[in-house]
Amino acid sequence: MTNRRRPSYFVNMKQFVPAAAVVALQVTASLAEELLPVQIRAPSPAHFSDLVANNTLDFGCRPIAHPTSDGKFELQALLTRDQISWLHGEYSSDEAITVQETALDKRQTSGKAPIGTGDRFSGGSVTPLGLGTKASTASIASILNVNEINSALTGLANAYPGAFFKYNLPYTTFQGRTSVAAYTGAGPDTSKYRLYLSAGMHARERGGPDNLLYWVSDLLAANKSGSGLTYGQKTYTNAQVKSVLSAGIVLFPLVNPDGVVYDQSSGSLWRKNRNTRSGSSGASVGVDLNRNFNFLWNFRKFFSSSVSPASTSPSSEAFYGTAPESEQETKNHVSVYDKFPGIRWFMDIHSAAGTILYSWGDDVNQSTDPKMNFLNSTYDGKRGVTGDSVYKEYIPAADATAIKRAADATVAGMKGVGSRSYVSQQAVGLYPTSGASDDYAFSRFWAEPGVSKVYGFTMEFGYSTNFYPTTAEFNNNIRDTNAGFMEWALTAIAVGL
Image 1 (spheres, rainbow, N blue to C red):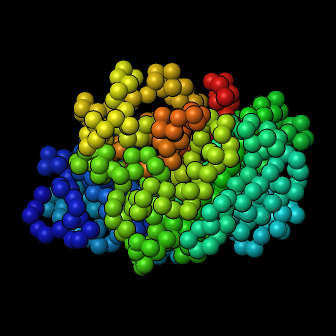
Image 2 (cartoon, rainbow, N blue to C red):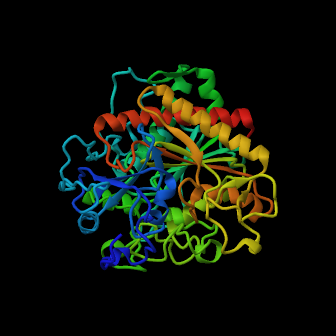
Image 3 (cartoon, one colour):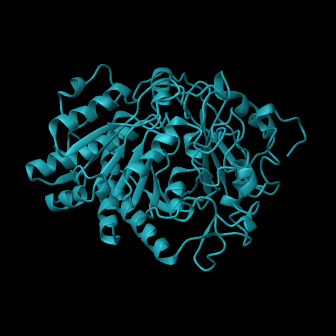
């Protein structure tokens, strides 16, 4: 490591890479002019620790160290040209490190699934239908635009009166949009609903709302016709369809409409919402909604100073906001638990990593010391260092078994489609997170006496940092996730609602 002066975007980094690390960087092509995908290869996940501590770098939804076929590990990031140029200069004399770049304009859309134009559901007069009830060769040509997502909900409500219900959430977004949620399967009594799924929290993760809406559309269509569902090589009977619906499904398909509108119009790989109170231009606009939930939100207090589970900088992709639940979108998300107090299982749908994540995300799980938990102030300032024994997050053994069972079943279902491989892992993974939706869901049982225990999961569909899928990938993602949703729901039923 040379002593040359680091540019401003690295000023918070204590050490870019450990001196002994053997790290290989390879920059591949991207549709983004400002952000290019980078694959960082190293002998072990520990070699990435200083990289991920720098919260000014963009590691996609969250940093994940993927094992490679040659026994090493790969960390993927999205870097600007300036960042890549710095890496070129920093490692130009190191034969073990290579940096290659191909810059493409982000607005080049050849091969990428287009965003739909107009309204394919005609304001709700056309009923949405997914891929599970169609021929194996069927495909969907384009990703839903924001208006179509709301129109799809109206179409389902019109097609299945008394069985599908939609409602407006209480908080309008920073740009004045009204968000819509829906529920189906267990009738009008909101106390009977047990499954909650959300999507569209990170704007650039295209296809998440589509995956959820088309799955629910398939369930309702198959239930009505008496048929089953088929996703690639995975098939489900009508009895399984009815069983999943009877568990009661709550869906919030578009958490971040302002961000999605901006991303779909700009092609800028935009992640956050569009709140300008903390920053009015460029990267300083917006809050990372998945760092804004009330779970160890004040990470500077609760976590070791050696880790960065979120960021206080408005220019960071992981900016945590000005307070827990400071954002209208987060408030909307949380309000669902109040309307549906019987929710027991939660899934937040993201891309792109190919993983199913389960709690906890703040530190490694342990089931032996109940006093070592996120509410115990004795451990403030000690959490998040995954390789130590100073702190590990308590989870009852029965809960640990249940959530891993569900995550493994979900992965098996997604793999069973035949498109690609997925893995399940604890959410803490390579680094800790704070203020995330899945941990918030699970934490409520201990933090808010009297509420139901909710098992929280995050589905990361697709391929690492591939937020804009091709049309073929988009359709594969629908099939993969829909089979995953079926297995997750069926396992939830088996474990207990």
